[in-house]
Length: 196
Length: 196
Image 1 (cartoon, each protein chain N blue to C red):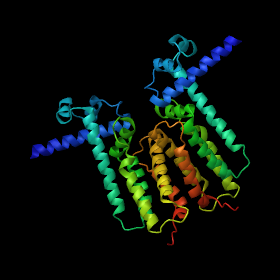
Image 2: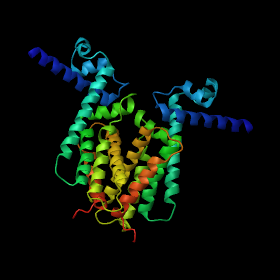
Image 3: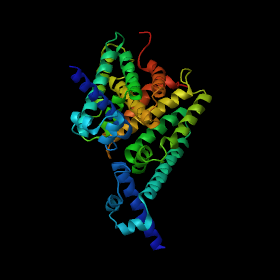
Image 4: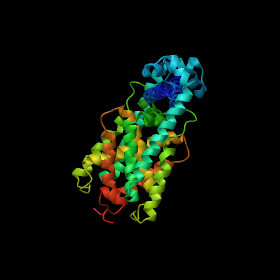
């Protein structure tokens, strides 16, 4: 039992080290040697748990997808207008891009590794659904078609993604997320009536 | 004279071929062999004009910067409210990302090649300037601070960049640019009074 726990912990250390390396150096730029060094483990320990770099990348992506799904769950369980949930979801995604190494690496792997899904496939359907619900619920002002609101949200998250990547890892700040929040505060009254 | 013209044409063919390869495969993923094949020229012809891949990349980037500067000039020479110019500039940048191989490659080189400037350094100061002018000219509604308008424009262009890259080259469509235009139409009345 203790042995199983130790194995699980070793596995987690390896997956986190792989995520860090993928996020920092991309899939091609990462080697198993770098990962075992980052993890502070031997190559034997690594290959005992993961046979290939691809297997590690698959595991990192599964974890990244899970983190995004948890964010969707966490944000949308709150009772609030649909458009508030949509806005908060984009902010939470930006925050994860700034803070969470699994989300960072999953987003990067999706762009760089052939066969990896674009990470937007994990959250875009939910954005679209929330925009539709906001529309059906009469939350949207007449010029704001649900498709346009989805397009706005998608461009803003993609923009935050690019800016966070360009600015490099800034573990302690949430500068881009704060910028996104200010932008939403600016444009929101155009999309929904706050007094409704 | 004819000989000089021919040399200049050969040079242009090579720079365009390099831009195409850099845009498609990135800096590391492009070799001189690929470039001379794309150009339909011999390795001798290539190395006569360019000694290294870095020299080609520098030339491509200078051309990309020039294309952006021309866009700035073209957009801002029109007599229109400052905020119209700002909006139109973001749309034009998105169009160039969809259509112009020098801009595509310059944006990509800026992200991937150490020492290459981020292409936003070519246009962000102009966005900032237009937002300030719109503010000073009384064009902005009171909640729209020039910094927030700049942040919005920057996120939207960065978002368009990511989406265009993810969707791959689509030479004939301007789908993302149209989306950006719709998004501006949606949020613009929140930023400036159209009747002013």
